[in-house]
Image (cartoon, rainbow, N blue to C red; front, side, top):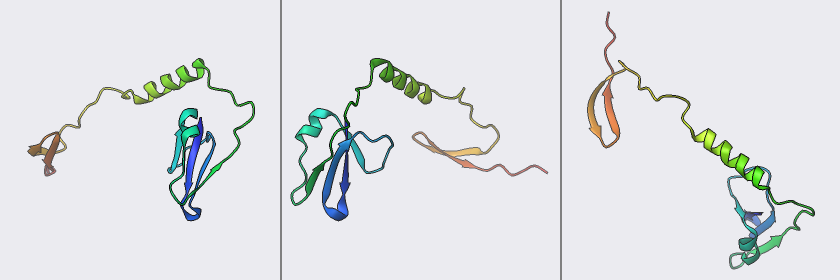
Length: 105
């Protein structure tokens, strides 16, 4: 796995080892796509050396990651809508228009 980063100021595309953290304008590539990568016209492609002895993730690592993603995607508990927070006065698709109830005195 490799990470592709564009340095717009220098018109350079940098392809290096897989990054350990997420950056907004970085793209992770598999080895096949990294090998076929070309830079846009007028840009330079800089290939950083791959880390020596870098191991591929084991199936246990991948399964643990998949389990963590599934767990994070599960809802925390039963979804309960607040009651008595307003009166529905309109609806469009899944959106509702609510009017606040006046507090009782």
